[in-house]
Image (cartoon, rainbow, N blue to C red; front, side, top):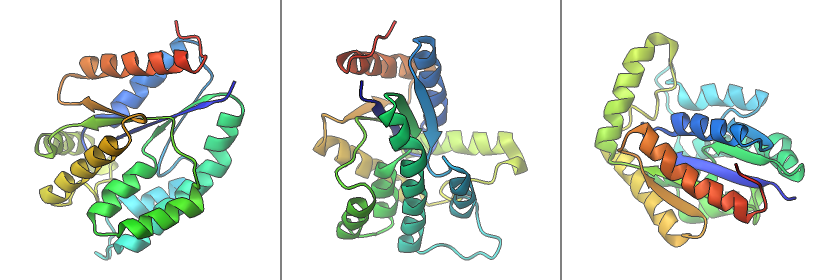
Length: 221
C-alpha cells in the first residue's frame, strides 16, 4: 500500500502544534504506521537551520526574503530525501507540521515573486505534493494574542519568535495566501476554523482525515 502524506498549515498561534500532536495520537491509537515530523527541523541538519531561521539574530541583521526562502528549501530537500520519501515508500502515514505551502504563504507575503517560488518548487519537489493539507484558519489578531500568551509562559527558554514579531498586516497577508491556495486546490486542502476550542478543532480534523485514510485503503478504527 502506498503511503499517505498529510501536512498541517496555518498562521502563527492557530494551534498547529497542538493539533499535530492530537492527530498523531489518534493515528497511533488506530494502529497506523506513522511518522511525525516538522519543517524546518525534521532532520539533524534541519534543526541547525531551524535555529538560523526562527530565532531573532543577536546582530540585528535579518535574512532577506530570497535568502530565507533558500534556507527553507535546503531544509526541505534534506527532509524529503531522508525522512518523507523513505517513509512513504514503506507505506506509512507521514504527518508534517508545515511544508511547502508555508513558503508560498510566508515568503510570498514578504514579496518573493510567484515565478521564483515556482522555480524552487520545481527543482526540489517536481510534481510531488501532499495528499492532504489541513489549514487551521483564524483571524491573526486573535491568534497573535495566543502567541503572546505562549511566549510569556515559555519565557527565555523559547526563542523561535522571529515571525511572531512581524507586523499584524504581514500575518493577515499570510492568512489570505493560505486561503487563496485552498481555493485553487480544494481537492487537496481542508480549511478548518481554528478559533474554537481544541476539542472541536480536533474532531473536525479527525472526521476528514479518517475518511480520507479509509478511502486510501487504511483501516481506521
